[in-house]
Length: 189
Image (cartoon, rainbow, N blue to C red; front, top):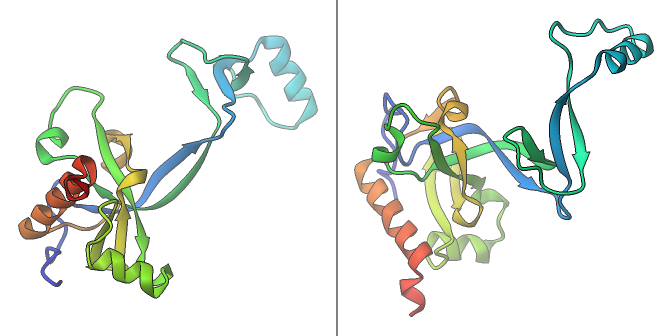
């Protein structure tokens, strides 16, 4: 299964790139809704008296719990966040669109060495459409991508991450086939 990776990462972010520390997240269930607010002057004064910190210029921003999902743009939900390698799933023609809040679809990459023998064999024999084998990833070794955990991430949060590897055209063709098998379940019919 060699021939999957270019000698050096491509010059621009592209489909099949493996990124070093992608910020993945998962919302806590039951959901805890939050709304972004600025502290009032009285709250800032109380906080300043309780600590030796000097409040930042322009006020301190806090997240306040809400009973229901806020509809404003400055809202959120409590989530677990972690960084791990990820593979870019979005096609290049989606990545290079300028002038919008572009989201790139990325799936987490896991080390195959953490799998038991049967699970590893099933993935690398390509019998698991949701789990894409990634042989000999530079700096990581044998890995797999979990397409079930793919998520959109703002392009601006990805563009400066260390790109560990870029796929060859043949490997990208294999990625396309895996995505089709996963999303269409053609092999299950």
